[in-house]
Image 1: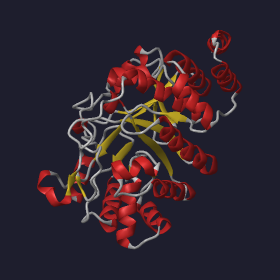
Image 2 (image 1 turned 180 degrees about the vertical axis):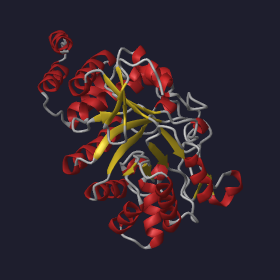
Image 3 (image 1 turned 30 degrees about the horizontal axis):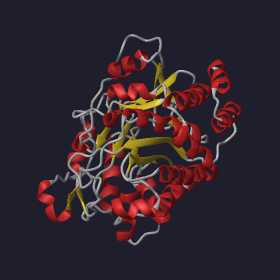
Length: 381
């Protein structure tokens, strides 16, 4: 493992990049200025080698996935984010969908007697789907399947819920936790820096508000994920500012499980004039995120957004998790023109995808406890 990084250090002529590579080998945190140098000067092979070194130091060849499904209660939303291809404004709600509590519980019941471990619930911000509504939903899911882990609600949804219910963040999260909410997804982070956030998502919770909600969740014993929407109007400095805020909060709480870069897709939204990032730039972003976010245990590539083959490629650029089975139950990225228009993979397909990359497929639960090691298994249940 160290042979590759030693050769990289010896062969690198750029003094700045050489020093960064030495720090990575020694396990020393890089600075924001050094991260900027990686974005500006680091070739794909260079950052990829460093990221893979860190990935294998942390996890070896282990590559994680889980058996999960998504429920999207509605795509009706009071907000109008320019990058979003998914939501329909409440004023035009006839173009969207709204699921009842019973309909969502019925979705859960379709997975009875199947080895699913997690339900992921996110959607638009609907004014009629309030705290009481979602508390009842969580309670009914838990009553039906107590061992199913409920990961639900972005900080954007939570902020709206709490303000409408006139609850503090602490009060609101405690009530949801008491009802059965166990962890938070990472959505709604977009780009924290107000210079960009005010343009692309100015009417929803601020970056500071997003971070505050996740900090309180961590204080209450709930883990969460973190995301960053990249490849649109942001500059390298905005990406670094975003990751710096996440790294600082993780230093404080240690409550984040994984970081998930989310590629901007330009179909059917108000930013369709922006050209999407190249695969080369995608891989560089994943690699640099792995190098910079030294206190995040995991880096995830969300395969429905990238596509199967590109997600497979990220496993050489620092990524050690490719999400889960999904089971054709998410529309957020397919509506934006992602590679996967019917995002569903069986466990066998996920395992084979990982094995093709010469990595070890490990089924995990939401908190990264190992359920099955498929590296030597050829029989699927």
